[in-house]
Image (cartoon, rainbow, N blue to C red):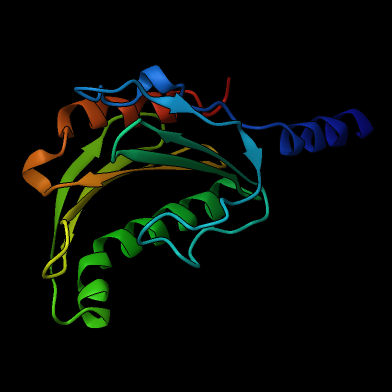
Length: 185
């Protein structure tokens, strides 16, 4: 009994598997740089997900290029498969509502989103895109990959200046699949 409890505690304390810099969609002019895998949530929540990700059981890793492109992966070990499924659904709802929520806060801007569909990996993953623009400012595009393996959920958020037509959707779908496959090393 104690050995089983010790194994659960060790799993909770250990970081899930994370993406490496080479797993992100290639940038045309700059290599990706990966930060440390860090316990807890990032200092700034990923776009669209402020207040949705729980701090308990979370780990994150930031990525960047020398230019205008960045990414973050946040993974959460939930208390059960059912809790992880709820978290994944909540993340998907938040991203699906992101463009409309953003427009309520920025009525002078434009925003849109695209559902790029489900991915057949582990307990499932889904990819979304969100575009935002304010007059006299550069537009921004974000891709989100949300997936689950058992009681662990991951979300990868990628962003750069541009619109949805500039987003590397096919490569990001592969990134999302890799992220979910890596959750339990």
